[in-house]
Image (cartoon, rainbow, N blue to C red; front, side, top):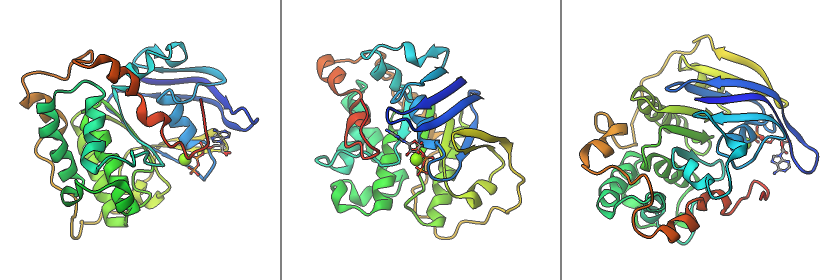
Length: 283
Ligand SMILES: Nc1ncnc2c1ncn2[C@@H]1O[C@H](COP(=O)(O)OP(=O)(O)OP(=O)(O)O)[C@@H](O)[C@H]1O
Ligand SMILES: [Mg+2]
């Protein structure tokens, strides 16, 4: 489903962020990506979401060579992805509700679906009482959970999450990973970057370790830590099969092509990628 073949990424300033990476991720896998700061983890994800293109080699997702995508095809490609950015990239002028709703609007979801789904995913991340707040009124961890809700909104079949637990406490970290695990059991492919080795050790999942832009290890870790029982869960409880629920419940699926206001949709469909890029400008 995801394939990196001899991929190297050298940024314009000469930084070698990735060196000859060869990775295959199958449909339905859960993969942790770990490594020191600067090891290339975010770059690895940005190549997957076509925010960056490789300097050498090819990145393929669902048999599509991402370097071959035209600019206008990129937003359509990204519809199949749920992305949690390391820097959140919430839209400051929109409330929590609208930030999540916007992600659905740009792919042409119907208002009826939006009104149902948005409160549901906001509830899952435990922020129902903050739905009317603006990002600037939220703590770092709350903003992070909005970013997660947005990634969950569209039932993407691939979720790419860059440190989705970086700003929350250990209990909530586990709850977030549990949530992602649950989505994964329902068939979603998950790629999650984290610094938290203790978290990774609690789950028996594939781990890719990056070191100086190279794949230093790839496989399962020894499951040395035991999974603790969660105390005081604060995230909402997802319904059974919450990954599939959205489409099952509504007779109409999300329109394959933007439904009504196509021009608007096209104009903003890759909104989040170019907004407030505090990672250091690109494109
Ligand atoms: N847009 C850019 N232009 C130039 N260099 C960059 C750019 N983005 C990242 N880099 C550099 O590429 C290397 C890898 O960065 P990357 O963001 O992928 O690391 P990371 O593993 O995600 O780190 P962290 O854990 O701190 O988020 C670093 O040396 C970084 O300084
Ligand atoms: Mg990073």
